[in-house]
Image 1 (cartoon, rainbow, N blue to C red):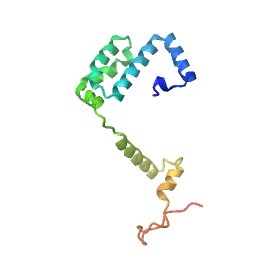
Image 2 (cartoon, rainbow, N blue to C red):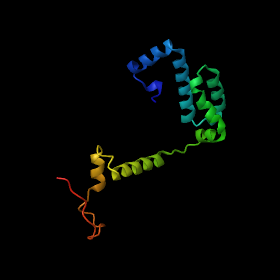
Image 3 (cartoon, helix red, strand yellow):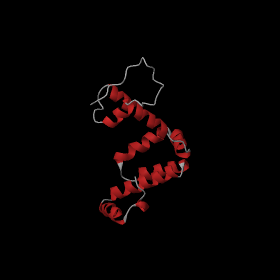
Image 4 (tube, rainbow, N blue to C red):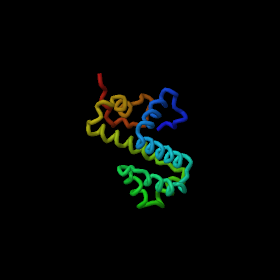
Length: 138
């Protein structure tokens, strides 16, 4: 989600119009902006008051987010307060999924990835001479 301050004037105009017409959308956008700010600034201490303000608005469809977060408030607050990220782990999970899908033949549209993982570097001498060559496509 792009910070509203970084949007071009033309890109920011439409959401402003929608928010003036729909008060529920305005409330959700405001809460999302506050949530993103708390995450970016690692302000887990502000989370309980944000949850109270969120529940005060008439948005029952989204109240399950707060209810679920309150069940384990200590873990959620700690996650907000630390600078740790799961980005590297997620990258490895994505790579493993890609390799798994390739093994089961479900990655036909990812031909460049297939070529990357099966191509043999002629300068690579780590492959033993008894290993079969990967199939080459014509």
